[in-house]
Image 1 (cartoon, one colour):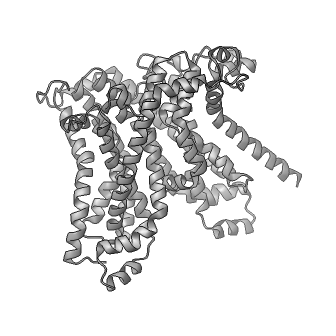
Image 2 (cartoon, one colour):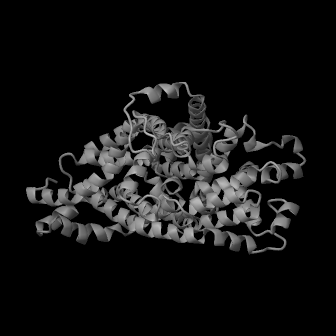
Length: 270
Length: 294
């Protein structure tokens, strides 16, 4: 009995030690974000701020506030379209299969794994041809389309579990393809809509490379690019850098802490 | 279920336009990128000449390319197994009917919620040689001899990066393996317990062999990341000091968008694409077979 008990204690020590290790970079960022420049030098990076100040948070917010709004626009416009496209494609691939639909599905899944570098150079040309290069419109368009393969995949997993007999019964009643979609499939899609939407929000909010290449000028940057610029412009101002990082981290941290169980379903389903 | 002709038309009318536009951006652009790699296109000048594989042969004599490739291989050889191993170990530990399982899981997953730009900012602070968290902590623990320049040292910069990336992905790996362990039918483990198997043999003989799906998922996701990585290193130190932490993604960005050698950058992208195809072929094969069975 005693061996079992001491084993449990070791188990908890290991789990807690790992948790502390995982939180250390975050904590040292949070602690530093609330310190004055003087306190940053006088205290260790993990000491809690003795005289907490909001100045770094306010100053960094001032630097990135325009881009925070840009990122909100990107998230808002990108999520709904890719979820909707994904849901339609998944419905067809799962319940309205035709000759060649497996190959098409296959090509959609393949898109999930195509590295972004492959499209960067052509995208610069495409967006400048469309007159979108440099402004937010380029990103709005791309996030809508590039989220679709992942959404298709998430919806397909769920639709595969809906018995074919459901559809067969509706068909006997004379319902057409899109009536079945509206009346049977959509009402079953609440959870995958949440899962896919949260995943898209996280991915778009955190994305960096497209914003870096396809937008220019302070007014058009997404928030990650603005943070990278802040980091580059205030090299030794650690409290300002950490405060900026905190603003960018906040939305996705909140999603993972409070809605983590949905997000996990999206990632586990891949 | 077979579709009749009318149904088929109404399905194709909706699906094909969506697919066409998506495939344009993924496949047509990939082909276009390859085409650009065969030219001498400079980006800001609209005209270009076809030069065949000349860019590819100059790549072979480019030491930056070899350094980058070596660093990508380092990610594949150390980061991928490292994050898989840590995920497996902590998934098994969490599976021991731990109190507060959800709290541990959430904490482990938190770094994965963050953008690479955020984590790179946090780790610049961790690794900062003069006032950074790691060196200050080492000093407080009277381990000053272990202090180092970290990401400013060419010999260890890649290992610093790998450590930080394992930190960021560990929780995701735990989730993948925990999901795998939980989906093993209890009857399998119960039978082994009745036979008196110790918990060590239970895991090595019964549970881990049934986790091939999780290993596969983790392997593919982390491998793909190891090949296309860019954000974290770019924000952390721009691939420095010098070229020592360049990877293919960084070299591609610099050649194309810093030096304006678009055609040469497209060669890097093509290589990144080919490497990722090699990795996802087994995955696509599995999915294809599963779909055919339905």
